[in-house]
Amino acid sequence: MHRPAHDEAREALDSAIAETGFTREELEAQARAGRFETELAHQTWFCLPPRA
Image (tube, rainbow, N blue to C red; front, side, top):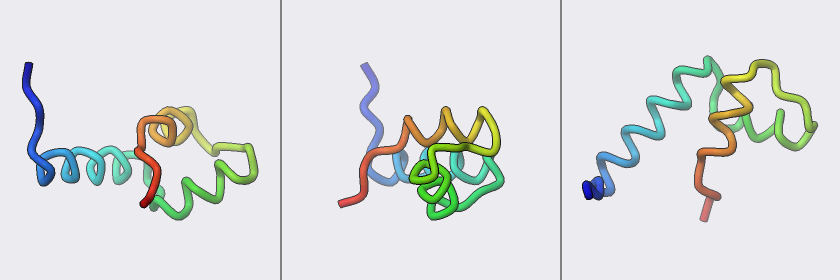
């Protein structure tokens, strides 16, 4: 089983967010509104870990 290093995980998350065309803050706003602009934005949001 491969466990990514912290930097690898961060890069993967940043890449996934960038692929949506939105910032994390924009995804957060869409989540608060309960309305995502795209299915990819919706799927990506639920893959993100909560902010500390």
